[in-house]
Length: 98
Image (cartoon, rainbow, N blue to C red; front, side, top):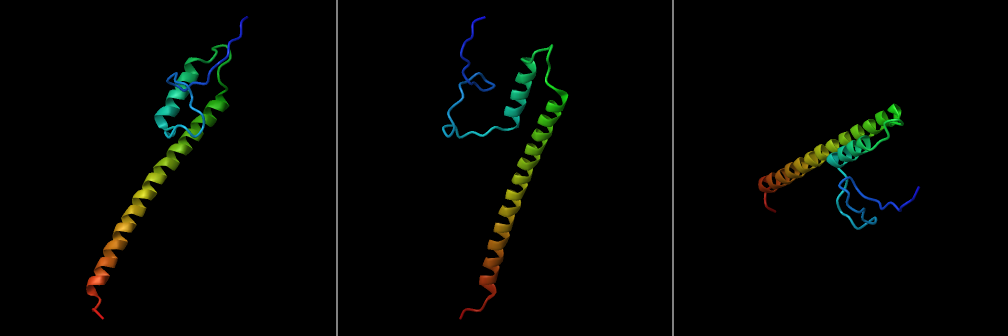
């Protein structure tokens, strides 16, 4: 059997860039593509362990939850910033000039 070198690639069969050169982070769609690619190419006589699959799904769920929480917290922080600026403006208008 001949052995050939395997070049690292992503789910779209594109070469993986060295660390620090790519600015895009993996998202939900990337995870789903990787998972479906893994399932397509697994050995049917030696499938992925059920516990490993459940662990991957739990990790994905955690990452998705953290992402949603981050978005929500950013929205709340933006609203607080706007409210604080509004209160500062109202306060400046109502204080008597010295």
